[in-house]
Image 1 (cartoon, rainbow, N blue to C red):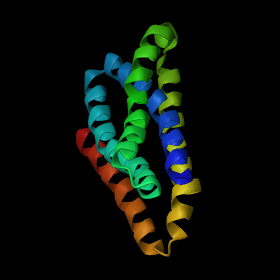
Image 2 (cartoon, one colour; image 1 turned 180 degrees about the vertical axis):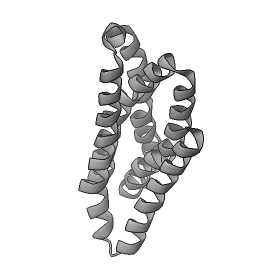
Image 3 (spheres, rainbow, N blue to C red; image 1 turned 90 degrees about the vertical axis):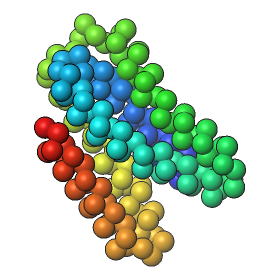
Image 4 (tube, rainbow, N blue to C red; image 1 turned 90 degrees about the horizontal axis):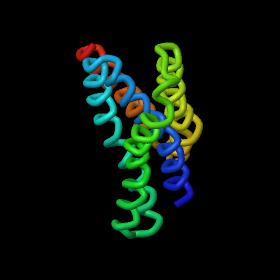
Length: 147
């Protein structure tokens, strides 16, 4: 349960500014918005799973797993809405690029600091490292093909 809640909190922290950045990226350049939409849609699938699975195994309750996964995901459009009304006058290309790097860094940190050690503790080191590599390769390939 602790892992599910920790991952959920990390994803909320990650998704809130990600929603802001996706919205401003789309305003800046619709092609960038499309690339962000596809990349984010792809990585939101494992994010939702990474919240739901630990919650489900801790509670044996699908509804709770779904709710926690939903709550972590809904922070993205909420971030976009709040960002539009609060931050719109302050967004510059530099701020946008720094924020994109910050949001990506949050998930990399969570992955390496919490998720990877947890998966290694279950004796599946090769599967964990291979999955991490395949995920990064997939994201890079999609961004390259769309860019």
